[in-house]
Image (cartoon, rainbow, N blue to C red; front, side, top):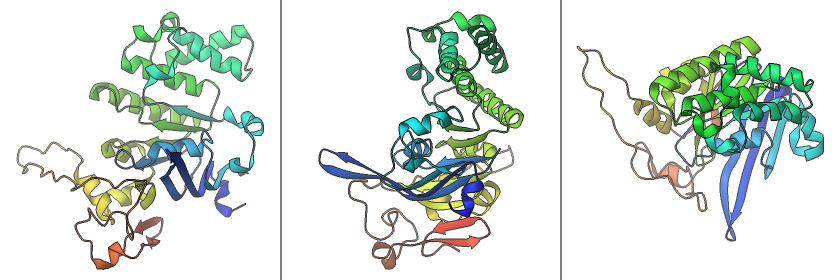
Amino acid sequence: MPAEAEAVLSLQNVSKDFVVRHRVLHAVDRVSFDVPKGKTVGLVGESGSGKSTVGRLGLSLLPTTAGNVYFKGQDLTKMTPKTIRPLRRAMQIIFQDPLASLSQRMTVGAAVFDALSLHNIGTPKERWKRVDALMERVGLSASMTQAYPFELSGGQLQRVGIARALSVGPELVVCDEPVSALDVSIQIQIIQLLRELQAEMNLSYIFISHNLAVVEYLSDEVVVLYLGQVVEQAPADQLFTRPSHPYTRVLIDSILRVPKADEPQQKLEALRGEMPSPFSPPSGCTFHGRCPIAQDICSTEVPQLRLLEAGHSVKCHFAE
């Protein structure tokens, strides 16, 4: 077992391919990172960059094509669904669309109760007591346990999703775009709730988002994905103050910030072109066709993920 395995979760050279109509789609390519206890690792990138797939691979909700996934030192890729099951309680996920993840035939209280029953936690009376306490902790009244999902707002549903994920006492939670479908004011409430719960329960998060402003606020470390590959990885403060990869710079420049009255308006620059097809990735650096600093070597030679400074790695021939 590698030395890095003291982390709650450790992905080591993880890859995932899908076969779609007899063609191989390269969704994730040799991704490695650790999630320390009580910390948040943000995964960022455009739609189609592989963020959600990486999150599901980390929870062993999808089998890997190659690589290893260690949860508290145990290699999930070497385990069967039956042997993984006792670990499921410690690994949970909060989905982007809580309405789609909840049964429309069950009350939201029953959905949380069902998670407790599945893991055989407490007596029925103790479970309902825990459901009421969880609902109140996430900012909902206990009376809402009798509501059906279609009766609640998006923000209320996401709070139910959080309550269900936390009901079984997890150590690791994958937050898959948990605020992207919510109004800005509700986003702030959910983000603050996630921070408070992390501090109270010493939770480890993988926070998946294309909203870099949210990732900057929540994350201790950030992993930037492009076409299924890690192109930059660094502590959040380093990444946002000294981004090295051209793709990361463009993403950060796209963060909309409202200037003060005496400041010039922010100049927004769109990233040129579109992400290449994962069915046939470009040769050399996969970003070279859209990169503002690309040179001839970029189209022929694959850059290696190299260390620029402590904890800060970048996959680019010309990053300094």
